[in-house]
Image 1 (tube, helix red, strand yellow):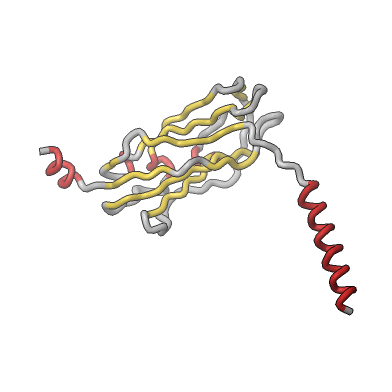
Image 2 (spheres, helix red, strand yellow; image 1 turned 180 degrees about the vertical axis):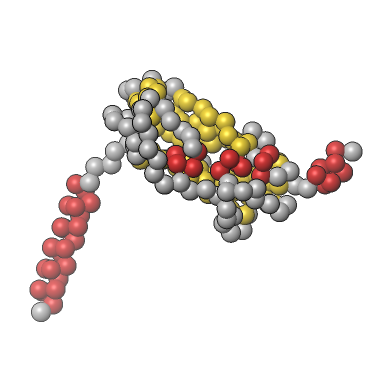
Length: 171
C-alpha cells in the first residue's frame, strides 16, 4: 500500500512539473510607471501625477490612443500609511468607443499623461493629514492589434499636510 501511494505521489509530481514547465512566460511589451509632481499636498486636488507608458520591447507596440474617461482605463489604489484603503475612488466599467485611434511607440519611446488625483474621485475626498500610498493600473480591453491587459505601476508615497503647518514651517 505504501509503494502505491509513493508511486502515485511521484506520478503527480511529474505531471505537475510538466504542466508548470510547459507554461510560457510572455515578457511584457510595455512598462507602466507613475511619478508625483510634488510629494506634499494640501488636499486631494493638489495631488498631481504623471503617468508613463513605455515600450520596453525591441519592436514597435501599438496602444489604443484613448485614455479618458480616466476611470475606464486606469484603476487607482489609494491607501493610508497603515494600509487602510481610502474609499470614494471611481472604478469604471465598459464604454462604447465608436472610432478607434491608435498610438505607436517605437522601442524605448514613452507616452506621458498628467492627471490630478481628484479626477479619479466620485467627489472631493477629504484626506486627513498623514502619509498615503498610491499605485495605478492601466488596463485596456478595446481595439484591434494593440496592447490589451492590466499593467501595474510602481507605488509612490505622498503627504497631506495642513496649510497652517506648512506656513509655520516656511517662516
